Image (cartoon, rainbow, N blue to C red; front, side, top):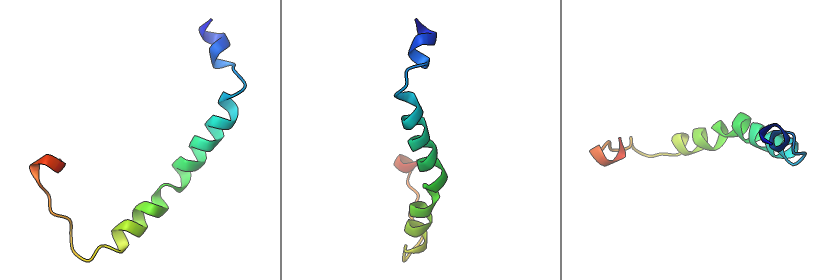
Amino acid sequence: AFGKMLMWPAWKPLGKLTFCIYLVHFLPMFYNIGTMRSPPSLRTWDM
């Protein structure tokens, strides 16, 4: 039953989509870091 669930055809496009997001997720991260005017404040709650 578990193997049949893993063979479900809908996993293929979903896997490709998540891999694509994994490859390009650094672009918005670098944009956000590059546009910051001051360093972020580190608080205990954020850690």
